[in-house]
Image (cartoon, rainbow, N blue to C red):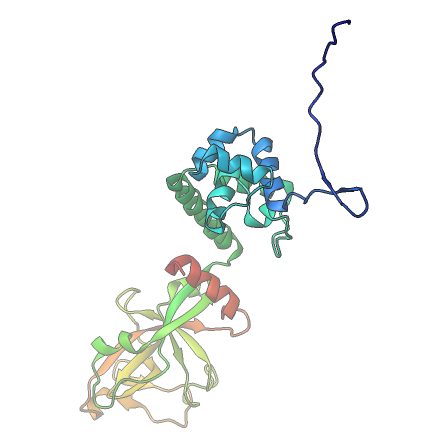
Length: 287
């Protein structure tokens, strides 16, 4: 009898047979997360053992994930995503709401995830500095002065407390405003027709500027009152003739000179709007 020879057959894919129909039952689909682990691992050219080491699991565990026999523990998802340089949304094939990144932005995210913790922090600081610089470019030039809205405490008459009572006022910088130190509100009509009730006047501090000369208008404090008047040799004069001359010799209270009135604030042109004032504070106060 001729000798029978045997050929090795190729491995066959075995499937489960339904006893009722005699047909093969399709195998269970590999979970999306398992397929995508292998997909992204291969995409970045990372070997299975290198990936296992990065996630701190065994090579067999990775093999079981990628074939769908088991799924990774939920606690390992952050480490898996970091090793594969992807987000959890990418890993689970989910839409990432609010993150419609361009290809260039995705590349930057990928580069960021490849940096060490120290370099990531350095990059964040650099990005913050660039953003502040850009914000500064978009913010108009602003000058901050002290707005003296209220008088001093009754009976004090001490100019050393004067600055403490002012609050910041934000004005768009101009040659005139840059010379000023304070903003005073005008109360009443004693300085009409040049200054009206409710006007805001710019005051240059003395001795920051030249000494106040006779005939110039200044800002003064007497007792608990602050006001603007024309400075004369013997006293203070109102522009409105209906108000009497204030002789220095007729008062027992000391009259303190705060500064020279150099102009008025144009509310429409000079007052910074809230948005620009907020930008200024964020840039200069680190908010």
